[in-house]
Image (cartoon, rainbow, N blue to C red; front, side, top):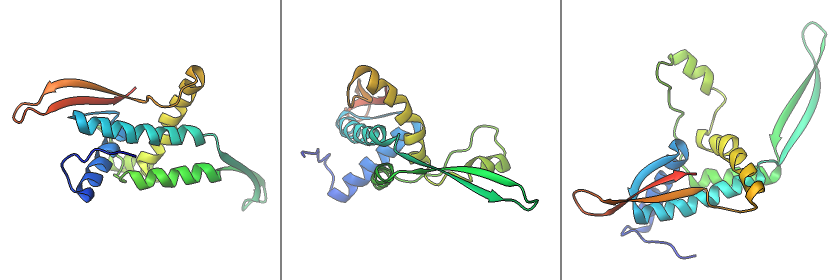
Length: 169
């Protein structure tokens, strides 16, 4: 598959694209050069399509346990199926793992309570928000891909590079 070199050595180019893919998935939109935006769009479309294809692959298990008082409690656990787990690992290899951001006015204790179960915020966001959202859209339109939009914004002040806004549709 042909890739753009973006005037960078391989290790720098891959780190740059990985950083921009992570930024786009965390925030939903960003401004970059047009060539970078087209490359990031290609990668993000693949990530989201992978998540959409495997979002429904879950295993539900019911376990009956006895608590300290002798009452029987049924606990239902939901685990990733083999396809979804493999997709999750592929996505984790393509994005960085930044910490979850604190919301404005959120206390440190509330932040810790909200984020204690989240180990990979970007991957969780892809599966819990984007995959669910785009699954219905892909069923309705019977299409695969097209999850990003790249809009040209004109030349950048300073070096004249063509800037573009890339956002999730």
